[in-house]
Image (cartoon, rainbow, N blue to C red):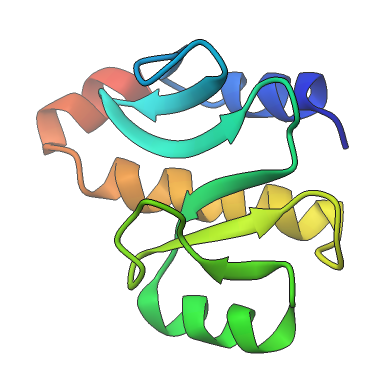
Length: 116
C-alpha cells in the first residue's frame, strides 16, 4: 500500500477532511474536526490510529509492527507500521475502527449531519 491509496481510502469515508496542522509532512485525517489517522506524507512508514484499549494490547502482542502510539495516548492509540508484518487489509480495518471510534464520540447532531 502507498500513501495515495491510503489517502483515497480515508477521504472516501463520510465527513473526512485532511490537513497538515503540525508540519508540512504530517498528514492528519479528521472526522467532525477530530483526528482519526496521522501519517508522514513523504515516507508513509507508519500511521497512528485510535484503537479500543483491549484490542490495542492484543494487536501489539500479535504484530511487531504495532506499538503504542508515538506522541499519542498509548492506551488508546497505536502506531501501525506500513512496511512490516502488518497486512494491508488489517491496516485498512484498523483505519475503519479508528474512524468509527472517533465518529461515535461526536455529538449526535454532528453525526447526523455527517451521515446525511
